[in-house]
Length: 182
Image (cartoon, rainbow, N blue to C red; front, side, top):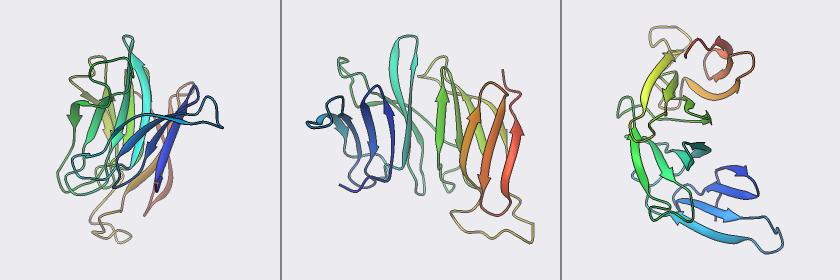
């Protein structure tokens, strides 16, 4: 299995295996990993990145695809749930712009969306993600940009204590943004 990206929480690995899907594997005993579940057929057939969070006692993963018509899927990752490894909500900007990397802290999700910049969502009701804010880093008229599918905001890290969002932007480099979302 090709693993493109992953996140780990309490010895459980959430693995993005690109065209093979999204896997949850228990590594609490590294000598004997146990696959708990998988979502083999993501809508665009690309499992690119993920991050987990717990909202109102519900353990979920934010799952990002990477392709045309890529969406953010919210996936139930509680193995005791009757909807384990099923998407229960989606969100997207424009169908021809792809999501890239993401993070979540409680009810707030942060992610890069190539030419649609940095997005922040409110997940207090995870079945109805709502935009809180955005910063569009990409300027299609600038002399340093192209119309390349993979251009714009590609990576991020969030410093919740200082309310800063660090963004890797392919044409512009490192951007440091102040998070003023509530």
